[in-house]
Length: 139
Image 1: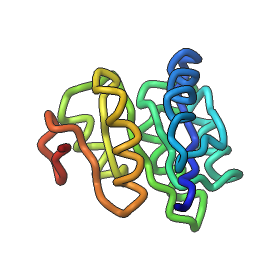
Image 2: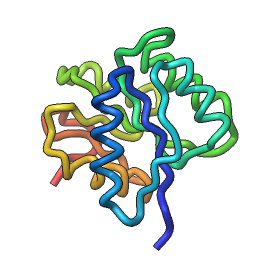
Image 3: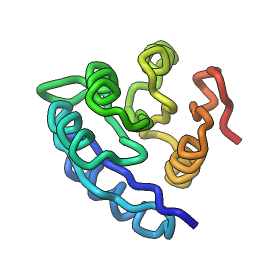
Image 4: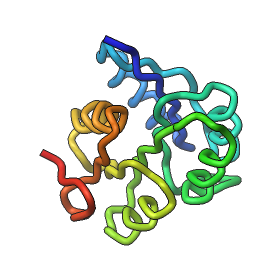
């Protein structure tokens, strides 16, 4: 089983700590870094080249939508983006997908969906929560 490397980018420490604790129980997922703002997320994505960046939309210095584009521009590696946001409106998910995000889940979702989304995105699928009715439906 190969390890999926993940960078967490969220301006709330409790969210980063919670994601780290939740994903620490997954044997195939390794957290390689944490960013506290969008600008730092871009720098760390370039430096660490994780498989997946879990990215919040509302962050200081650079919002998540702009960070999606800059992360994809800053490296030749195919870093995949999973948006984890409190914004549940489908328009946000559609816009994130149009910018290149591979997935979008809300902070209101069940915690087990995060690992599922990471694995699906890593395998090349798109993963969007059911309420967004986008390319792929969740189980």
